[in-house]
Image (cartoon, rainbow, N blue to C red):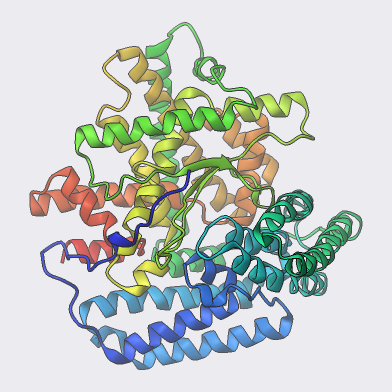
Length: 569
């Protein structure tokens, strides 16, 4: 559905103790502007996604010269930020400065130490589709104007794939396999969906349409060549390791989420949570049917799933239930009546995820369509793979996914985004916060009675929530072991099957995701941190659960130690 403007949400956000953010340091304000200007010059597609449309006609340059220049730029920004003496800045600026320093160090880690641009072909396989799709799907300008930006970006796709061929060196096979899937999807997307949209957007302008067709034909050919190169050249020589090692793993978590914990302690925390949730899963399954094994009980729930044709409509029908419950129980302020649109995950973005939320950026004032994506079955999957994929979308698990992706998860976070009190908090995201909040919401909703008054129905809803918790717990444990303890993707898949009761095909997808997303422990770790902060906040302030939720969401997706500093100030 088309959604109306959310511009009315823009405004200063009160601090938990009352009052608006204090005036900041002018030098730091200039640094913030310069930092994001440089970031979006390097990532123009992200600029478009943020609602900053001066970047619409540019596409990413991933040549080695441009990457080297970005490294120099980041080093200069780090030195400049240090010279501002962040500890002496006003409170809000000091919070944002610490967050930005982590972002700078994290990007340098990726570009210099891990060199992901050398080892992950997925970065290239999905980039072109995302760059074009962001211009097509949101009506922030007249279609013909957006089509001209599409043409400009299409002109850079040949160079993008040329850079990929130069840059990529011995990636892990798991990465190349997924890049191949994404690249094949991109071929169909450009030849079909993009071409069809352009014909309508041109609105009879024959010259503009001809210009598009020339540029798109070159792009389609480049993507097809890249797909063939991945299959025939890169895949046979993809023998690299995905493991980043203990030092880099700890550094990523420290820079991106400000979590500084010895890996042994971190792993023990995750394993303890996995045991707690597993024991609760076994008890809940026995309450549903004591005559069956826990796996058999979950499989009986999984059998209640939609057909491939009804997958998207079934999610659309169920998502409103979570919103109605939030309103009825008054658990958080929902600042808009606007709803997300439910759609298939675009082909270029099918990298192993099952559902996601794609929302417009905080500076988008016109095109406010938010897309709740659900990944369909692939046509080339065999019947067993299709069935295992669909079983994940059973009635109870989808209800839990709706909480995570929409209410009060990611979609609610999006509705608050224009209110975030500073530019930094509008434009950055720490995963322990964003994903931790969405995962926290799943358990919170069940704790507050979302399963309903019938004991059997409530137990089934709790079992589904616990399976999703086990899934995140396994990500926590498997992610650490894949990257620091020599675990293979196949070994990790067994953990997901045995401990999280995942279907075999889905278990492999989950484990493989950990290979390219090392710190995907942030779901469970973030949930645990938010639960601790909630309890401490309520004990200190005497506030209600709703008061905590409103205060928490209003600050944006800062690393959780910084949110704690704000809320308990």
